[in-house]
Length: 427
Image 1 (spheres, rainbow, N blue to C red):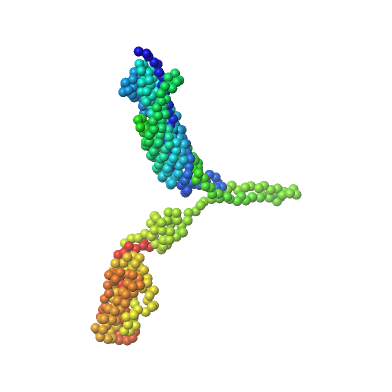
Image 2: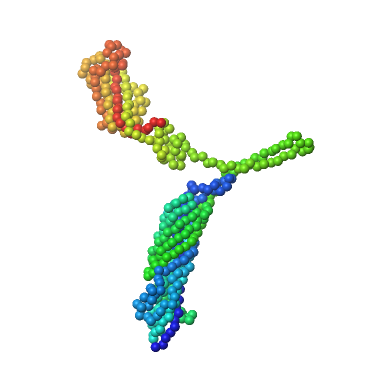
């Protein structure tokens, strides 16, 4: 049997994982100088790149097992299961928590050295060209979910799709004796620790797991991102005024002067509270709350169950059930209260003066009670079922005197509201 000493190296390029997210939003600012404040906005489009080490989860024993399964008489000399990895990508940061990236990933080169012997050299080459630690390169698309830890630090999780290809060559004494090419689509995932270096720049440390069709790859990388939307600057300048010291006692014909510049002081930006409720506008969910009442942490009027009462008296002309226009404003206030606080029950009681028959006065008192109910229902859309009307005729006189002044006082309706309602809490 003729023996051949063979050395083979399988080579593949691949790219590092792309990923990231941006931490800052437009409200984050750093005081860079006493003259201005600089605000960053790491949102929108960005570019990124990283470098690192990719390691295939294949050892010497795994390669030897491949040889045995292929019935090859070969021994492993050395396995190089890791290589330099890199990636480049473009991304878009939708908000503080979510981004998407499109890039290119190269997982680096791998190789295996072995010796073997065979009687059929061509068949031997045909078999060994398929044995190698798997690596890949190709296009990626991935989503990035992030969570801020502080103003500068955040953690990110990534999930991506990898459309990859691997090209391999078998060599003996530097001459190519075989080759193999594999392509597939697989899923990869990873995590990052991100640090905002400056307004437009972010650095990160990452770990990713790339599951290829046969072998898994682990990637440790260091990368940067540049955000095109960051670095908006607002400058608040302060005027420096000279301070002049004059020596009035000097005997020289020219006064001696020295000019000193005041050190600029930081400018405080005051929060606004338009409705003066103690909650700043940028977190106030009820920016026009009534200043007479207490508010909650969102700036909205604080409501609590309270015993409510509302009384209204309407007086009538003699022998009439028509309400005078002078009472319309009070009735409108009543209707607004009923609708606003969802009153469940109203009682309207009609009364008359003493003159006239009891039967007539009873009917007139009921008509007077119904006259108010009609206005509330037709003009203010109050539900009729919550209004209880009743007439008491001349049975409940306020003044029993038999004169016109007493009669005017007795011709009336009385509305009463007594109910526990959800009402605003007064300061």
